[in-house]
Length: 337
Image 1 (cartoon, rainbow, N blue to C red):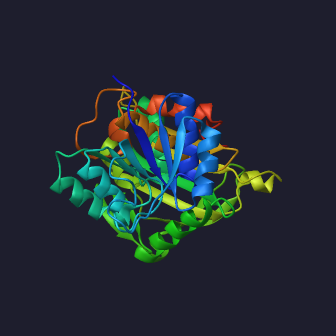
Image 2 (cartoon, helix red, strand yellow):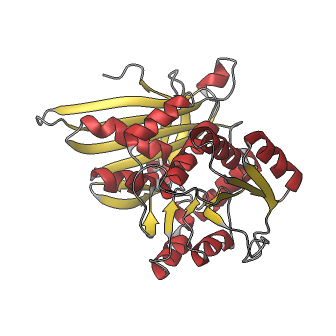
C-alpha cells in the first residue's frame, strides 16, 4: 500500500496522545503524524521530539476543528474528551478512520448512533476501555488455555498520583457523575450494582488490600461477549500502588482472574497481574497505537466501515508482545494456584 497521509492526534500533547505518537514513530518511522492541541508551542515540542511530525492548533468548538480545508489526513485519534464530537464528524465527513478513548461506557451512545447513521462512511474504533483496550486484550491472551470460561474478574489499582493529568482527572470526574453504579454480568445477565453489592477489596501485587468498587466500563461487555462468560466483573481502586509503597514511582497493577474448563473438560483457573513499573501511561499509549496501526492497515487486512472495539480487531498475543516491549509483564498472582 502507498504511504498514508498524516494521522491527526487530537490531544497529542497529553500523556496518552504523546505516548501513542512516540510508539507509532518507533513502530512505523515513516508514518506522518500531526500533533494537535490548544498550545502550539507545546505541540511543536512534541512534534520536534518525534521527527516526521507536524504541529497544529485545534478548536474543538468548530466543526472544521479550525484546520485548513485543504489539509489531508489518514485517520483521526481523539486522545481527549471531545464533547461536541466535532472530531468524529470531521473524520466521518472525510471518510477517515476514527479512534476515541475518553467516551467511556456511559458516553458512547452518540458515537454508536453516528456510526449507525453513516455505516458505510469509515470505521470507528470505540476504545474507551481501561488503557484503551490493553487490559481486555491481556485477559483474552490469558484465556487462550480455556475451552469454556465461567467467570472473569478484573481488579485494577490506579495510583492516586497517576491519573493522567488534567484530562484524565476530568474523565474520572465525568464518569463518576454519570453513574455511581457498576455494570456486571451475572448469570448471563448484564446487571447494574450499587451500594454494598458494588463495594469490594482490590488486592495489589504485594498483597495490600485497597477499598474498591465495581465500575461501569466497556471492558465488562467486551470480555463477556468475546468469551461468553456468564459472570464478569471489573473492580477499581484508587490509592497507593505497590511501586510507590516500595519507594519508587507509581506502578500499574491489574489482576485478571479466570475460571472455567480446559479442552478436556477439567476445571481450571488462572490468576495473573498485568503490571508496568511506569504506571498506566505506557499501557494506554500502547492500546491507542495498536488501534491506529490496525485502522490504517499497517497490520492486518483493511478494516471495514462501522463500529469496532479493540478485541474485534487486534490479536491478543500480538498486543501482549507489544506491551512487553514497553516494559509491561503478565505475572502470576502471589498465592494463586
